[in-house]
Image (cartoon, rainbow, N blue to C red):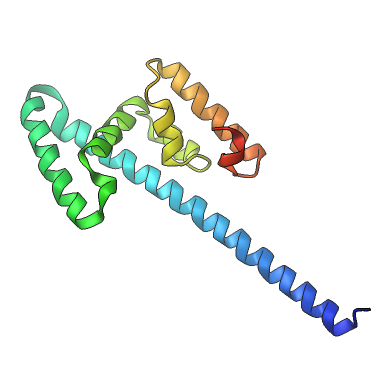
Length: 146
């Protein structure tokens, strides 16, 4: 039989675990959102300043150099292939408001999954669908089948 002290300890422990898990989950969601927005901004910068217009060939060389520098400073997330994805992401999802809203529920990897879709409406549909399923499952993207 449990005495009152054990019951209080169990209740205290359970509540602290709940607080820790909730805050960790929120921190992870916030970090995912910020990373996704950062990648969008980097992609936007690459698309606008370097790869567009008449400077395309010259721009590709610049992106290669910048990629090397970023990789040295920040790691493999900024390898050339990923920078190109970021540019494709910013071009494919050109409305920051939509990206900002979706990134509260979707991670970068979700966006990468829909990038190959050629149709803008299809990309947006599948991204919104994934976000809705993640919300229903309390943000657990792995269980949503995405």
